[in-house]
Image (cartoon, rainbow, N blue to C red; front, side, top):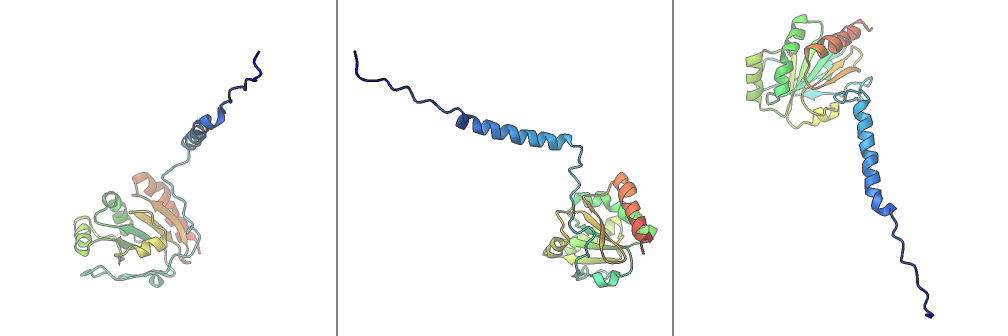
Length: 192
């Protein structure tokens, strides 16, 4: 007989080994819920909707007959502010919609030329046409940050009272132009 008592082998705890798997499964479930929610991931909410448009004072594009942007000059009118650059391929895609809006003439169109070379911006407008009533140069990108821009193109609609009433991220398509922008413009024009 042995006087030694056998000690049971230490039990391995299973949960620390399963913890990474459980975390992965929880994250995968969240991602799946987001995918199946039907929410449009391209819609980026803006904290500026309903807020006063940022005070903007940008110099004009070099060798352009158009003025720069001074947000005070747009008071009392509906203004579309489009952030664009010549190096931006989606900006080329949406440009015909801005040209159509310029022909309409009901809104002032202000362009913020974002981190671009003046000669390239002028060439872009020379090739595609100029829909803008004013173009301000944002060489540092600071003004775009004030407007909450994530990337180009982005477009804001500012009502007569100076508040941002609509924001569109990315280039306009025929559907977004017809179904989102035009109704937003009409509502802003109808507002007193």
